Image 1 (cartoon, helix red, strand yellow):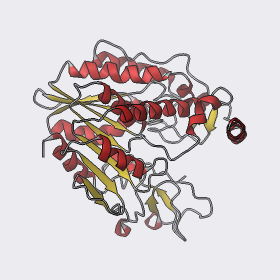
Image 2 (cartoon, one colour):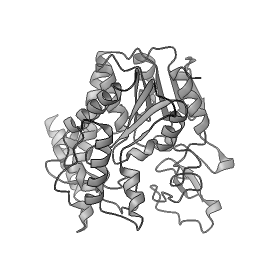
Image 3 (cartoon, helix red, strand yellow):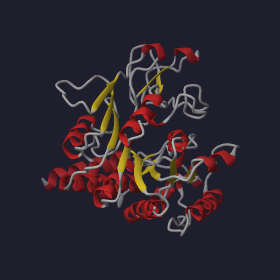
Image 4 (tube, one colour):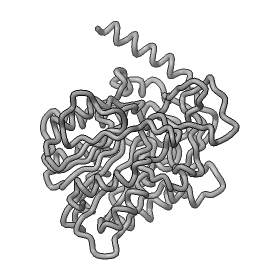
Length: 384
């Protein structure tokens, strides 16, 4: 067994050695990370905004937009809120991922906050700086800050953020409910446990062109190791206890980085509340008899959509950056044999790695069922 482990580790290190970053500030960490334990959310936002302005390696001319998309934010309803939710983004992502949902929930009367996990918002190399405790402590601190202002506190998370908030909620009985979007409970990668070891030997798992102002494209091994820590923590907590409060979980059948079926099994076993809902984007799982699970077709040829991706659930079709007519398209989607179509009307969309003869697939970055998602949130939270 030890011999096999060493061989696997050696193979991954050799593969990782291909990821040599260019001589760019993007791949050199900042001198420090911003603090996250301010006494007020307002001060936290102000301090983080200033830190991003000083430390971000800007990708485009509109620096203000880049700062805005990576700065923590708050949405307050018109009337004093009794209910609040804290959102936590995923690995390499940004607080802005929740902007569309935050606007809708604030209109429904929620006090909404979205935080920045340490290591994000500036340059990919800054993921080398935080410890896992920084991530857990940031979630706990801001959950406590928000709890002091509302009668009912919910937590929400995307991918790695879903792991962090689920772990927190399983340990904190005061959390009223969860909204989990593509939660990263079960990665579809049997070698992830090696990431902490590789982090001591090599700095980068993946180095890509950085052209996305809301998401890192490159990944240090330290970042992969931190994700592994979040997986270990949430799996341990799920094995030890069940979450009895309402939860919404969404998952794409064709998620390129997670095991959707394992997540569905966990929902049925560890989230028993009858108000809970699991939204499955894809073909209805065979033999499933759980009225809490809704399957929505992810093959929508009339909109040139073949499959749903890991990330698209969060964004409205009208989103100005990731939406159906948004300014940013993720063309680099794991395809190497097909040229980009000359006509944008010939471009299809899907999960990472989606391949089809004579069809070039960009990443799907918006949710055609976004309004239905909001209805599901209202149903689970008791607003429906």
